[in-house]
Image (cartoon, rainbow, N blue to C red; front, side, top):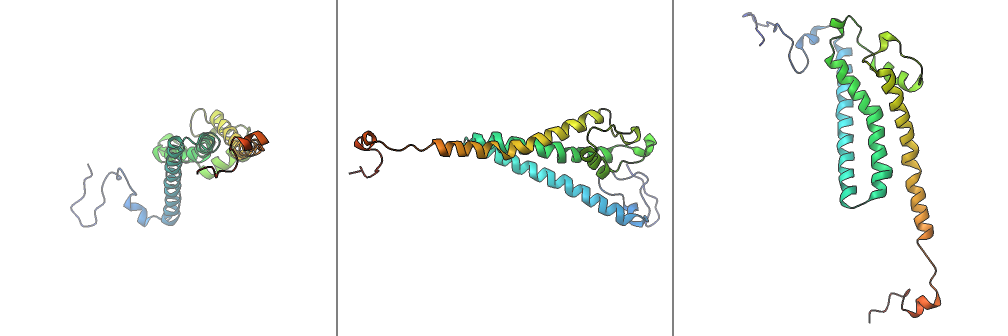
Length: 188
C-alpha cells in the first residue's frame, strides 16, 4: 500500500516491508549502514548453516546409532552454538524488529552487548543497556552453559575411547587357542 507521486523518481510514502529502503543510497552513512547490514545478514546465514549441518550430523548419529558422538559431540555443540551465536542472532533480530526511535532509546551496539556478556560476567547491566526484560538473568546462564559445553566436548569421548581400547583386548589363553579362537584360518 505505497502511493507514488506521478512525477518521475517519486519515492514511496511507506518504507518497504522487506529489504533495504532505497533512501539509504543517498544517506551520508550509507557505507557504514551497508557494511553493518551485510555483517549481520552473514552472521544469521552462517549460524543457520551451522545449525543445519549439526542437524544432519545428529540424524546420522541417530541412524547409525553412534551414541558417543551424539551425547559427547552433537549435543554440546548444539548447546554451545545456540548459547553464544544463537543468542547473537536473537539479538540481531530483536534489534531489527524493535522501534528504538519510538521507544526513545538509542539502538544497542550488539558487539558491546556480546563482549560485555563474556568479559564482564556477573556484573550488573546498566538500565540503558538492557535490550529486554530478563537479560541480566539470561546472559550469565548462557555463558555458564557455553563454558560447561567446552569440557563436555573435549574430555568424555577421548577418555571413553581410551578405556574401550585398553579394556577391549584380552590375551588368548591355551584353552581359547584349543577352541579354535585366535587364528581365523578355520574356514576349511
